[in-house]
Length: 252
Image 1 (spheres, one colour):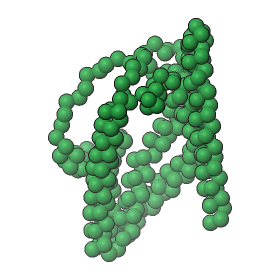
Image 2: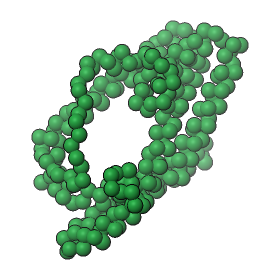
Image 3: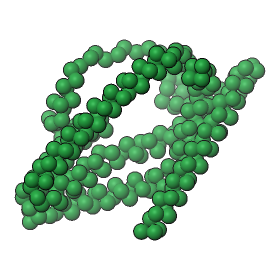
């Protein structure tokens, strides 16, 4: 237990150091960009940007290296990789280990209801924060290299409720955006396993537990080994990419 606490504290310290260093280096890179572009040496900055920060998936970036971009995206994708198996196995095991049917029903209801309520308040908070930022003029900036795209048409908010029950299991597990459907499947599987008992579902429970253990080991490895580096890289690239002009509306 003590070793685990030491590891957790050590990771938090390293994350904090990476956060500070990322902001500091990012600010320096931001001013370097402005200095080079302002002194007529924009080509030098373009070379630095191509080597370190360029989004290699963008049009016209076929010859760019984008080292910081690649490192940051690899970390983000590694986290996205374990979202579905982590949510599914954790909830399934939690529901499957409850023997009290009444408590099981309450927990299942609270799990799905809690997810819907949190999603609703998160959406409301995002809308309010976005409107405040927009009215404050924080979005009145021009970002170079971006083109307008046609937006999607609106949809009925009740589609969120409809999509709780998926029509295809394979498509649900192949999308990181169908988290609510994953929760429903996990709760349903846990309930069914409880009804059938350990004699019929013991092998399945062990399989899910082993998958969960593997996911936890993978996630811990990614966070402890690459988390601090990724934070530094992502922060540095964000400041270096957008420059000081995009911070002026926020500072005004």
